[in-house]
Length: 201
Image (cartoon, rainbow, N blue to C red; front, side, top):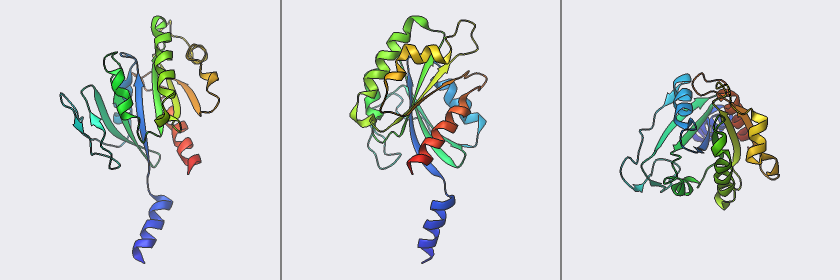
């Protein structure tokens, strides 16, 4: 009986969990965002895994995700939600490995360097390729239009157009202008993700 009450209480006031995959081209600011979030809130750190090895993860949800070099994983506690954020490297040689992290992903954070006009089409191609994957069909999409502090940065509306976000008719998506170094916009993005998680429950 006590166990039933405990489970009910936990469901009412306990933390919810959300598995987030954060990707984007190299140098978009993913790791800076991850650790800005980590330092800004109470965080339980999961040691970075996969440095120089490939093997099963076994850290979360009973998964057996392969681990590879080129990523960080941290748990960010925010508004009674535990976000497990996988920050996966964006170099072109690593991008084919992104698919190994799609399983059980509830939210996708796609980070764009708003100042990099030359590679925004490449970013669009990678984003659309990922969103076509069956394992991500139910994942919500948050786009961080990063590096807004730079004078020639494209604004969120321009990034929306360049990435073709309005064509995503059957997916919940949101774009947030951010500056990873100052933290501007990051928590607004997490607020949106938190609301998406609450609406799904």
